[in-house]
Length: 122
Image 1 (tube, helix red, strand yellow):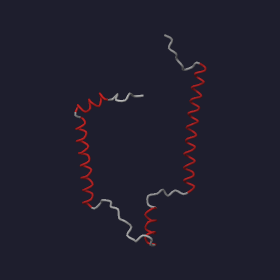
Image 2 (cartoon, rainbow, N blue to C red):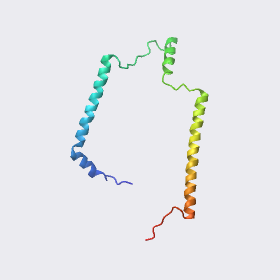
Image 3 (cartoon, rainbow, N blue to C red):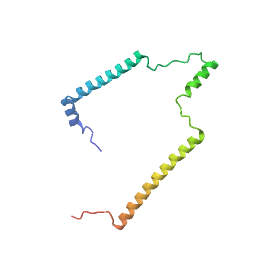
Image 4 (cartoon, rainbow, N blue to C red):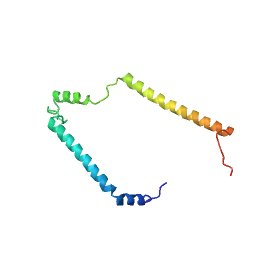
């Protein structure tokens, strides 16, 4: 476990080397480029803007629009596909555990027989 404050020398070297200011300046440049890129897209009319639901709350049109929007960014897998995916994931976990157990058993067997274990007798 690391000692508290054990990294002070490195921090001081970093501060004194001037890299902190350099990195700060580079970060500001990257952020400015990003802002410029988004401004350019906005001028071209390619910017994404949120349009609120135009209908009044509680009306049938509002509910229809809300349900249409809510189904846009969700997975469209069926029940069988979801179940199959879960089962495949569980099977992969079981296989990984089996491989690990087999490896540990092999290591233990080698240890008992004296294979693969080297002791330094100096």
